[in-house]
Length: 480
Image (cartoon, rainbow, N blue to C red; front, side, top):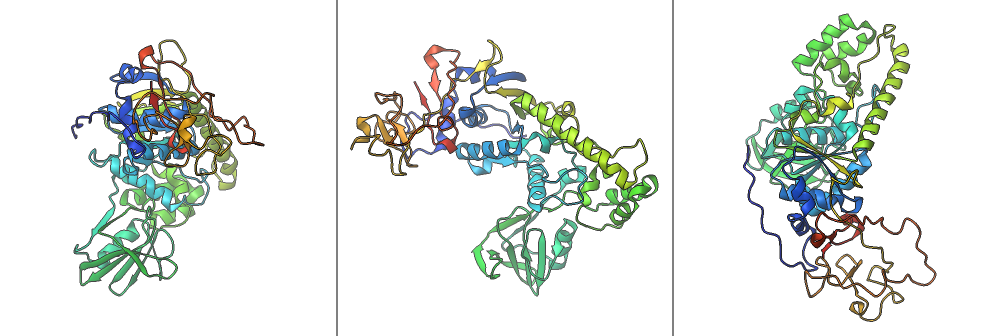
């Protein structure tokens, strides 16, 4: 287990050139976070605009690693992960997606989704590889995992490596890749003489492995359209493209099902023969005895954050109910014995954290009691501009005359804000005479244009702060 390194001191001044990654360090002395740190179970109140920044601050301050952030929906997970990547960097944030297919639907999930799930499980198997934050919707975490999937290693190839092309192709086919004449889609592999083309499950482009004998002479990405090399690579990681692989254990289990569950004989026989076919993942609940979920794989040093726990529990109940309804309707068409329902793919919410020793916190938008640690935060009000800064009707010839200036992204900022001041760096914000710049003539402010502001106060009046909305809202933060 790796020993956390000492945190770097927070910056004393910020300028417009300062990246967003410097902002989490400003929360290291936030009283609400200092109060909660060290607890195994607590509730932290963080307004939605500052949620990503506060979670990034926790990851930067806490000695726990990794952080598993659970959200109610996939949309919430993607949005939060994108914001966290701006504060922590894309390499330190990973998303564990859910299958986009319905339970028992005889269609395989997207190859990219399965590859990303396998990549996350591989990262978790070694603390040195684990990202700082993993974001996952609750549906993804409730789904059963194949034990072998948690141990599946990628095929790693680097320039100059010695590779047996026949053995390489066999390994890729065993990992779920389909051999084709020409690679055009994810999960395909092709061989042309001494060249092996493969489109990794989580890759943005296919990869060409050019061999000189058994040595990798060149490793490059190439275009699907014209099959020409575009970018040289030093190394490539090729993750499996299926979670359910025809291992010896799975084939033996399928042979047992031929006798015990004759209603699915056709599928069991194909699986027992080691075939790979579309929709084979639908039968995962019958082929896996263990109730393994991702939180079971977390180390004791990990931290779980349940974002809006009530919504998470409600969503988990909806997922289970939808699956049960679908199972009952399909049981008759499958010929399942009366009274016997298909095994569930998703486990109950109470099982989710039953086998993990990681600390678990709840993160809510508003405090549920007087003793709840609360971070004071609010989003900057929106300003209408033309992309170059405030419009002529909302600012004079000098933006600083009204207390506003255009930040690096073209969005106006209050002068004196530590993330926005063009000259003074970190200091007390100088606000315009009005609460916000006036709108251009003929423009009105709809109810959804302004960000909801949370006016909760910190535990110490002297530490009251105004923290920003997420990076996507273009806001800054300013302790005052």
